[in-house]
Image 1 (cartoon, rainbow, N blue to C red):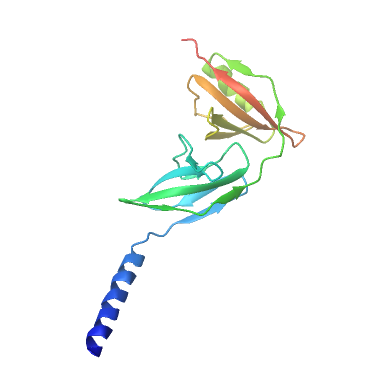
Image 2: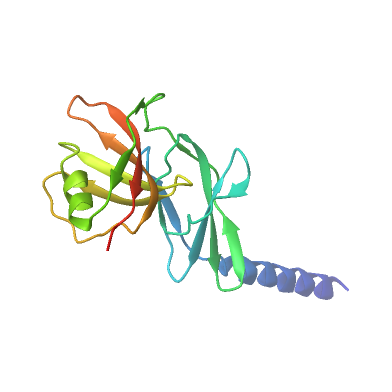
Length: 172
């Protein structure tokens, strides 16, 4: 009876080890504003830890939320999903200056406006606050914003942050 018990423990331990070794390796890193998940052959969905809701459109391995808070990623590999612990984003100022809304009507106007906003950086977000792209002043961009409503976080020359509504409606 004793050898049977030992064999059972070995088999159970082997089964548990085999299951635990199936967990994929992925890393999460942040720079206080942006979070990145390094995972091969995986899909990612970001979650607001305060509301416990998935953030619509936040499904890239890079995530730059418009607001400070706690966020986690649901990383799906194959048919299994794994959720990271909540990660704090605290790199945005407590209050950002609210600028006047801007309306752009041509693609050239849109690129010029973005490129002339700052000596540092301009972050573009969709209406849900999901990061779309970052532009740096002085660098030309091939990226085009499609018609729609956006939020823009602008790092000003006085090291302040300003938030503006951006309405893009191209006239063809």
